[in-house]
Length: 600
Image (cartoon, rainbow, N blue to C red):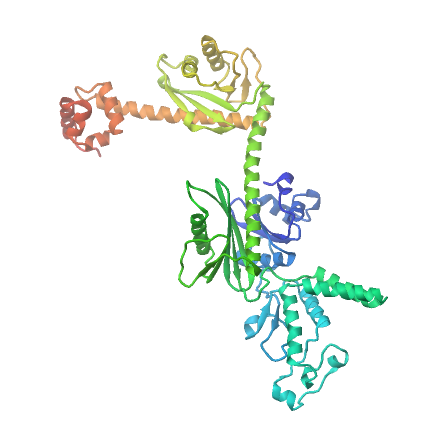
């Protein structure tokens, strides 16, 4: 399980949608929540995991992505879109093509307000939705009908039909829910005023409606009409509880892209949202490392182009929080300053800021993890200082032939490859690992002392007591023994040896400090073996060149340094060879290769 309680506690405590991804980066589950932190934390609490399937899903989670939205209803809509699009393995509901309801206000005289399922079957008018919560939608409709006299009949209330007295008032008129426009008892202007207020409620402009309820409630209380006051309070509570508008509060907003950027000196954080058919379909955040003198305009242009390609967006309108120099035929790019479109930009900014916070917390977590490993290593080895810089040595030879050694350098628990060094053993003849270790350690630290460079915090020797003692003798001869700790690590049982201690120390097999020491040892071994193979290959090729009369080891080495291989030496001209080894030897080389023929 990749996530800890500490990591989950840093998630936002806001409504939104969460996505669980496996190690391959594939979405395996999509969910929504009123409070993202609490909901996701419940998965990682063993006592609350309901079944084996959920437990298995949690163990597959390698990454969690979150999108913050304005309300739980927005979360349900986005969840629905993501499940249908990605078909996650562990989502069993919402995989069908179920359509959410809309509220429709048709273009007609004395327009009705009604709920519909498939808006493509209806022409003209204004659509609100989709609504993820049907109960909430019905409560809003009920609220509108209690506040305003909106007809529910299907009569064609044309001027001619009303003048001819073609219709009669129904029960809705007699119980006070309708003012009788069918008989001309309510004017068109009066009815349109009620419709305008209904539009405000559906758009989410609820301030005036709330003020109206509060005023009526206080007025009723003053005249001791507690029944009416309670009715007003219930309506106000209903309005507060079921504020069921979607993220797209203006029904005229249909298909568009929203892209917001927030940057600091080193990074830019971008959130992209795709709005389709009036609903939030996709939300994606990313981070970009800024180049020298690269401004938000350049970054936004590049990232927005990539997002539109990735999500196959052909929307004709793009909303951003910064002006960009990108002209696309038929596409308008605007920076909204107010209204519903500005609300979308604010939501995108909220997600970009959340992604920035998560990004920097992740970097801090990596730093803390490195420090924790070094602290554990310090404790396991009983060191006085934190081993920030560690150097590890290893030898490599085949029965004493081509002896080489390597030194790898780790800083903060990670390889620092620019500090790696390899050595040709010069003073040792035959297979003598102890003498080779003495030579390479002495050469390394004599140079550091001569160049007045800092010594490492820990030296690791790949080998047992013999190699460790040889390394320590080298430090003694340099008069720096004791200024830094030295240990040896034996391969067979992962034994840790200390100087002047005949008994090894065993670190717990699962300890991160032992894994770090193993990484050091394996990296030093890899680096030594690679260098040894290269040297062996080079020497064998050099031997072939030395078979040519007049070509000695130094000349062969000079040729190989310049041309890298015998094949390339064959291919160059005599003039090019003469520049390296002189005219006489160049002629001998060309003559030899001509007689030898082309290699098979």
